[in-house]
Length: 358
Ligand SMILES: Cc1ncc(COP(=O)(O)O)c(C=O)c1O
Image: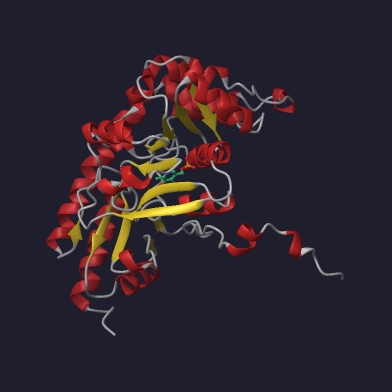
């Protein structure tokens, strides 16, 4: 077989490592607390509309303007439909934003540790990554605004820490940032916060959200964004014309029509999260105050990598990040009450029996 033309791969792509998503086990008997999905199924109202949408109309392309979803977003968030855009997950919106604003050598700034996919998205554009370290408290680093970046990314609440930068600090950042400021609010429904209103006064601010977490709809891949109409019009040129499939549009419309169910479920997750955090602290973990549907827990001993492996052996999957700032931490998604009780009991058993002690 002739050699594939590897020399034609753009050097920035050849040099980069691909993103490694959290494990999706093929066997069903895991308690899955590793990728921040919602433990509850989507509301029956969403599922029944999906079933009714499985008709011969699936032969037709979807509405490329996602009109129904964007009308609902506009109504719910007090903006014009022209200030909204819908993506195949908020990952696609991030990709569209970077493809719109970043070319080779242009600077993208973000505080770390954070959502690690930002790195690949900048590398794909051959952009320049400018990271600013979070302090141990995960307070907003002042140096972020001084980075003079073309695009600044801020996950708020942040992952993996779950910490939240308060709105007045976000407002201040928006005032001090000249380039595009992207506020990634994937987890904001589990927090008291949200900065969508900023897009009305700051034409360089883009706010993105997702149905993957609070709406229990990670499987339909639906993210949505808000910005000034002029910015949305530019992003629109980049997006695939049929980026959201027919069934996802139907599910998203139904989910927005029943947004109160999402809010109820999010409140339940917050209660379980607080119980989990208290139990982990009781066991001697340091747990950052979480405003998301996961907690970040640190413990010097036993090693987090060993704890992760032992939990996995006992069929509980949590997230371990093999990188310097996070090597002594586990990120644990908030599951159902029963799942979290199992996790707490299992951790207590591991710690008391010291099975991780090498
Ligand atoms: C901070 C953050 N932003 C964006 C995403 C992407 O979410 P999705 O593409 O499922 O909407 C994630 C996913 O875990 C995330 O943690």
